[in-house]
Image (tube, rainbow, N blue to C red; front, side, top):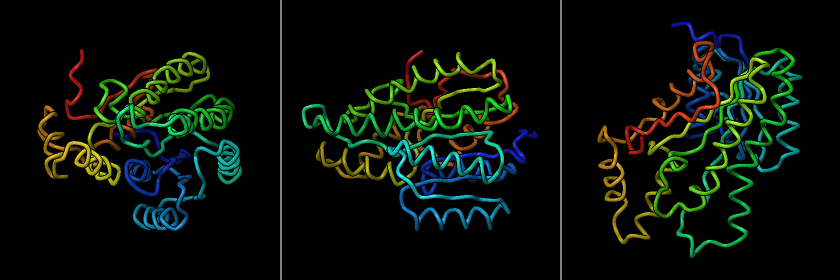
Length: 262
């Protein structure tokens, strides 16, 4: 199936590792031109070089903190100057601290809002006008299955990321007539560096081993296993494609059946 992505310009945030990198690889495999950002310059440069070599993709990369709205705006403007257009924007960030409510601080709540809600707002503000000019665009926000089913010990993620659902619906309604699709994709337990961090936190809080923590998550899925990042990326790339042309304002949960709601 031709996804209609070849030649499109795609921004992917937090793209040096984990889900962001997997999505960047999926888009590159379909022929997209990439603009990548992440906090750690060395890891970002390594990822950009490997993606360019593996897929023959053109890759523009810049190190930045996604909670810095001015830096995000400069990056998006630089991408538009580099390529002359922006077609796809995948906004993404790491997760907040894993701890129960009683152990959280006001500053941690503020930081979580900056990281897991306002960073999406910054990318949307900067990228949507670029898409409007071409009357075509895909804005995809990466959140977490916690927006559908709260996860024990992740109160910051459970609460703050839920705002992404409202943002997704609102922007889909506002920009649909401009040919722009806005969606949210919510990963479940996926084998990334972030998952290893969560397993260690869960193990400490529950007094169990890291292996036992991961086994609990595995048993909670319908498929009885954790996800490979590529499986998540395949779903994300589809939502960025021409083939998803009548899907907007939605939250797609990619969790192997962990979420049990209707």
